[in-house]
Image (tube, chains in turn blue, green):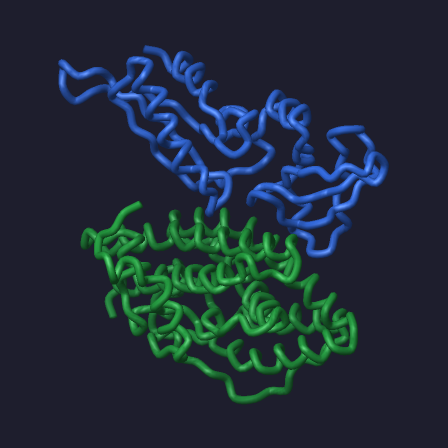
Length: 167
Length: 252
């Protein structure tokens, strides 16, 4: 049994709220361990370590269930999912592949670097419109349809769009 | 009070603040003045309830009596709750909600900044995660203080009144009770008295930008952390706990 195969399987598990991203793209999966079993007859145990994106993210329970179902269906009945909080998840862990998929889906990917939110009234980051690539955009609401997004509008093509905010 | 008792109480104080304020904000769901702000308040509520889950899960684990986060949220009575009085105050109109949120967010921000250095690794991890969210809350409530204060004559008057009425609940935020004292000595908790100056300065700076007056010094209410609550908490619990009280053990 290798952890690489498990990682490949986890690539099939998508975020239920942003289904274009897998949990590996998002950086939610932190580690995969193969733990030796206690009984000789039992298979080794697969342990998947995940971290929540946001404290109140309602997707976490679904993600955990989906991981368990995927492992069970693929011949790994002995598994467990462990949630860790430290180090805290950051949007910097999102893969380049994931960022491109987000943009293609119509959601502006998070700007790199998570320092912006520490300054109270720092100017909003220039966010590129995922539809026409213009940076002439404006935030309409800091909070969007899910905890991880803000609402923006493009002042050139006039389309409203979601921005996956930095964390 | 033993150290383990104080440790449990400390986590409950933090968890109850998040839970009760989260519940209060969730009452705005579907009633926000505009759609974006309805979404903002429910988003913040979701963050707070999420933080409460992490904290109450940990409290249940520390207690070690087989209770769960849900038992702690749904099956304790008023006098068991350790939240500060500020967070249980009614939503009132939008100005009251913003004033309460702002006065709490500034405190919560400084508190969590310090809690990240706690010797309790679980608490430090929860704090580091929560701080990212609280930063967004503070930014939102500060911007609204400024917008309402420096807005129309009516919005200015309403937010100043709300601020004056809510001010008496800010003193309790910095009270060190026995739990806080013991946890400070253990390197787990924060010295709240050290937070008061930065708090008052930050609040004054935002109020200044908002063309609002810092309310005059006066009597400060306290008691929430010791389980002595205003009448409002009972009404919150009556609604929040109804299902588990009426149908014990009910599950989704």
